[in-house]
Amino acid sequence: MSAPGRRHTTAPIAAFLGTLALLGLGTAVAVDRVPTFAELRPEVDAGARPPDGDHYLANDIGGHVDHHVLYFGTDTEVVARLRAADVLFLGNSRLMFALRPEELRPFFAARDLTYYVMGFGFREGDRFPLAILRKFDLRPRVVVVNADGFFGGGLSPWAEQVMLDTPFAARKRQYESEAAHEARRLAHVVFPHWPSYFGVPGLGRTRTFTAYRSRLDGTWHISPWPSATQRFVPAPLTGTGVGRGEARDADAFKAEVEARGGRLVLTRVPTPVAMPGAGPLELAERLRVPLVTVDIPVPTSADHSHLDAASAHDWTRAFTAALGPLLDDSPPGHVHDRDR
Image (tube, rainbow, N blue to C red; front, side, top):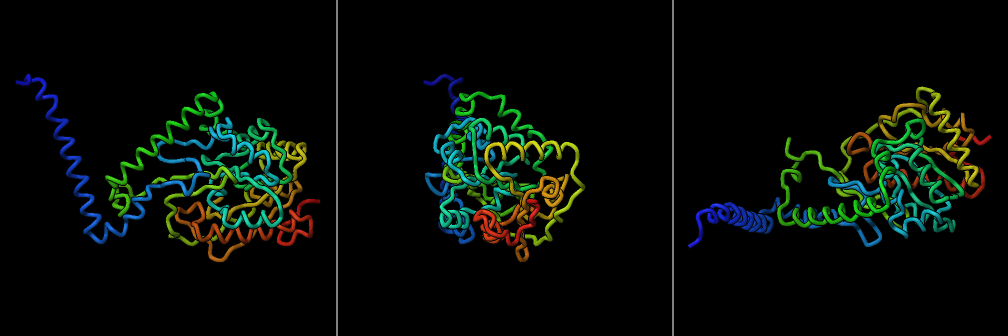
């Protein structure tokens, strides 16, 4: 006969396992029999998987890996691609949403040029990518900066933590984040969090996106990427004027790029509300560098900050067309030419 203490210990465990099994069975039946749930099955089954083996986890609700991978060079393929890039794109998450590989890859292949998109979340500015440029001695021919709060902001709090870490800690974080992400993905396939899929207020209406980064060119694959809900008028290209800190950092950044044999180019991804500080037109005039901007018809956003997928493709297509003459060393075309 089992001791009373053992029965009290095993009963809650048995009840939990039994409830878990019933919920799993109920979910499976609901997905098969209820049309509304069945329509969501492809999204649930996908479980935010990477598109292919050339992408690694960059960001999800349980871990941010991007900064560690690029700063510590934990992926040798990524470091090799960075060092080989003729054109380097820098900026915040708005740039990462905007630049689409489906448009970039044929554009650069036609010119026999390589590129890498090295933007970051956390509203990261110039200091962190500058540290990576120096650490790996990167020497791109052209550096394109999304001038949207890029200069004068220092390091984000997250970047400060990352730079205090060690290579061992960086690899540990990457492995742990990827393992935890896979565990959550499998759990959500068996037990989907239905309120988040139906947008029930207070129960997951705002879903955290997962980003996978391409080892080949640094672009983000975003899941889920909601359809646009808002049209917007882009913020003006002028801002509050170039402040002292912005001027200092912008001048130093340009000098660093040119010392490495590169050329600085500014742009600005369309956004309804720009980051604080100088506008790209003011910065381009101070630095005397080209400002390449393009307009797209009726830009749209899902979160009132980043472009949605359709507008991102439209912008990348128009932007590369405007950037092309500059890369080809022909007349700049749709370029606000401050390169005097």
